[in-house]
Amino acid sequence: MQFSPLRLSLIATLLCSANFAQAQAISQAEAARNEIAAQAKQIETQLIAWRRDIHAHPEIGNNEKRTAQLVADHLRSLGMDVKTGVARTGVVAVLKGTLPGPTVALRADMDALPVKETSDLPFASKVKGQYLGKEVDLMHACGHDTHTAILMATAKILASMRERLPGTVVFYFQPAEEGPGDFVPDGKNVWGAKMMVQEGAMKSPKPDAVFGLHAWAGIPAGRIAYRAGPTLASSDDLRIKIIGKQTHAGAPWNGIDPITVSGETLVGLQTIISRRTNISSTPSVVSIGTINGGTRYNIIPESVEMTGTIRTYDYDIRKKLHADVRQKVEKIAESGNAKAEVTILEKYDPTINDPALTEKMLPTLRWAANDDIVQTPLVGGAEDFSFFAKEVPGLFVFLGVTPRSQDMAQAAPNHNAGFFVDESAMMTGVKTMAALASDYLHAGTAH
Image (cartoon, rainbow, N blue to C red; front, top):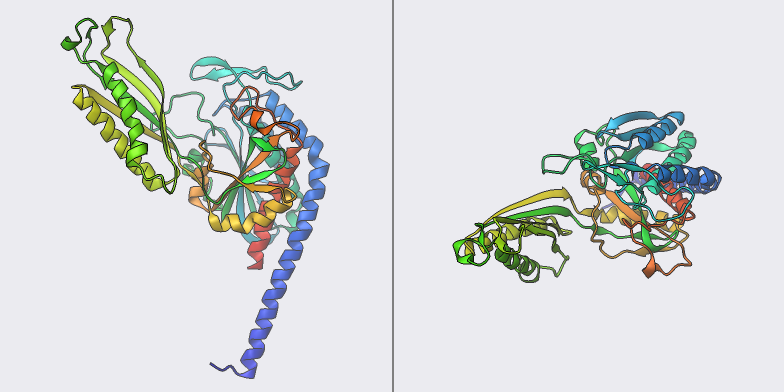
């Protein structure tokens, strides 16, 4: 193929223009990073104050009224379009840059846990609240206070850069990541991220990518851990009721013993993973956490109830596990002349980081953490960030919050009364979230 001199000249001009636009975008992204780093230092005192205030006033899922008000007032003061009452108590805000470009979303969760804090920190929680109809102690034992404060600071930094921002940033301050505090999930109810998605939070505007961050114990403060592809497990509630026939324990032949059938069921469930599930590509778990049945030592009860969890990282394996669990439990019950009622409630999908997006944003993570980044193994916990990342490409990373002087293996884990956040890590969190948004937007204009 041959080109005329005029066409060759035109091609060269276009290539030069494209290279210039890319170089210009890179230069602007680097300038934005410098500004983010400088402003992060300036806002650190306010960042810590926000976190301590939220920590001292924890609120259970769907009751984050004070926290949501604090967030909404702050975002409005930055001149953003703010919507409250999303998924009951969530907040969504839109920051439009003055320059054209893509749209990116940043997410933080706001709810606390029914945990009694054991620390002697001056801002330790002394708050009680209602959880499933009972009064309980409340604590931010999973770092959601940290997430909220980090995203509030991120919003302030990015809002100050509005004139130089090529695109739009959407902020999701999400309620009830840990689940609702006011009703028992029954398979029909939705909450948190899933409810925000169902209410259209990701439609107007629809982001091109979404980013999230989680404070994590057992990782040195300021280190970022990431993983491409499946990262956190799905989480499904398993509820089993074995129905027999009540009789005197001295004459078991006159009844149907659901306790014996339950024992066989426990063993049978474990063979689903060890003998019927292909774990060569990804692990899976079926665990029973509670067993309840019987009222007296010499009475064989009418029924036994068990509850547990099913976890995996793959949608197809998840579907097969559900079918295998139902079949196994029902057939074991049938073999003992009992009946089984099996209920599986799909709660959270697996959190899957988009591989291309993860690779694209690695330089950003390295910059934010001063090259202190590591790949994380699969995490058995679940996160409803998965519902955001199911709609658009997503990246969810872990921010280490354990003091570097401490033995990482001895750190109190997330969801523990002794969970502790080294607040020096929060600066890395702010740089991470702000730079993920800024770099993504500038990269979008370069293309």
